[in-house]
Length: 453
Image (tube, rainbow, N blue to C red; front, side, top):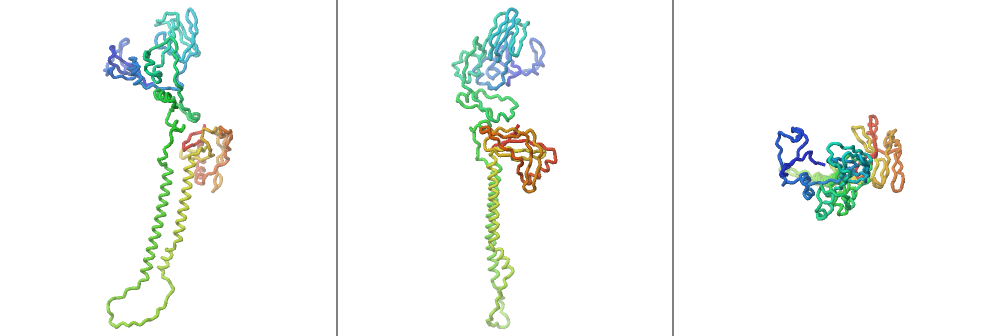
């Protein structure tokens, strides 16, 4: 897959290097090319995958080359390797038309065919015309040679079993090769996930997994879908962090209220004591002699203005009501976030509406099983979308040919005619309906979204 365009080697096979087509095209000459630049050469002691292939060193090829496993890539075709020698892939029958005779032979999956001069080749879908010039095979017989996939054998068998086989070894009969079955994982999301490129897998890792009778996964997400890898729950997500932060702030506010309540009580008691202390008289001796005559003082029942204020502040019921209100609000917020945290792992069918500037997702129906247990047909069109109600707002829409069927029980889930939305979302939808918008249906599971087609 990443072979160089040209591979150059000295006549004594001591040095080699790679060269690109652009540099070769800058050289002059026909039989012998003359280049004006100096090309650094690498000693054959330092082996690479390309040099090992050229020098037919199977041990170095197995060590340096990274062979890839491609699925559904090889198609029936015929390639000319050199004069009168063709490489055939996946052909059932081969028909030869020669000047003296016609011959039909059995095809092969992977073989070399040496055809005589002035003979044409026909297959089910290809035609190779007769070759007149540079023809070297003047025999009347068709020779079929079967090469061997040495790279595949090296990954599954011991070196003693292929010690006499090289990379260019061919056989007159097809070799019987049996390897363990390769189990490649295929998940149920493959029919709704668009894959626009062919995957190539490491042959070495496929062989290791096959010998251990394990499943071959093409990406890291597949063992997660299969359940072989579990998500680490030790890391907190954004919702959990917000819940914990809200609980901490609420707890600190409750503690602050209790501390302030105690401080106000202490301050009130101190002011009340200071208010009842009599004023101190002057220590200076008056000029007239004092007289000590006891008189009954009239008592008053009118309390001072300061005392009434502090008596009002010392009333504990406002603080009890405040604590109860905060505790109730904390419980409501905790229940809301707890339900929201649990509901996000369910399978839901949601409606996404966007006008390019903002996007709104509205749950349509909640499903009890995994997405692979439902056959969901997306609506052809969604019409008559409108909002009704002032406080209990609802979204109305007509879904054309929208169905959700359980694969196991064949039970069809009814699609609601209207969907409950909060007033804030309803106001956003009313503004969005006044502009060009686009909507489609999504399915979500474990907070992963994919579009239903």
